Image 1: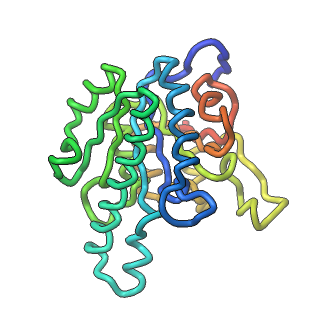
Image 2: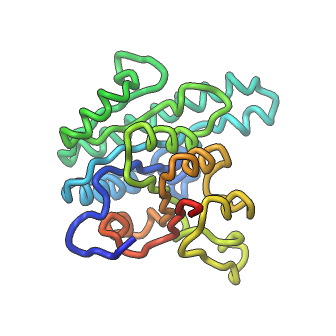
Amino acid sequence: MPENTSKPAYKRILLKLSGEALAGNRGFGVDLNILKTLAEDIREIHQLGVEIAIVIGGGNLFRGMQASESGMDRASADYMGMLATVMNALAIQDALEKINVYTRVQSAIEMQEIAEPYIRRRAERHLEKARVVIFAAGTGNPFFTTDTAAALRACEIGASVLLKATKVDGVYDSDPVKNPNAKKFSELKYIDVLNQGLEVMDSAAISLCMDNEMPIIVFNMNIRGAMKDVILGKKVGTLILPNK
């Protein structure tokens, strides 16, 4: 992507956030300071005129996969994980609206008292009206991760790019925390991610993005201004592109 420092490089984005990121060093729950900083970063790009949709995980509250491995029925565990994402979505909504960024939460599991049902056309209309749309409850189906939900929603709403916010500044060939010699990739192809088993998103999410040529940018959400730099087209993190 060409670097551009004056205006957004993308009109509509899908931001994928992990639930764990909201917990910070606490490891569980929601750190309100992190939530506030995240909301301010989102407002900064919202003020550039970018249409923003968000998919949030629930790992800071409940991890369905771990519960399943401990003996819980997988479908039941996944539904509990979906409910955790709704709680996180409401937390993000509250933080954004406190700083005057209008939002809508849409849930893949119907719960009319606290969220709209997910309707693609309605979501697109909210985005056109400059509302941040927060997609909760994953795809609404067990056995699918919130990474896959992010890829699905990004394709459905016609996002220009899927932004994967993580705790590291891109994709490495091994864990940079454990291996100081880990190599960072500035660009990758989808097929490289799949063939090398790189831990970016699960294979279903990567395959969906590959089939629909949805670019992915992986960046460190803990670096202030990194999200804005990505939106302005600067070379931040790792860009994952079609196989062409």
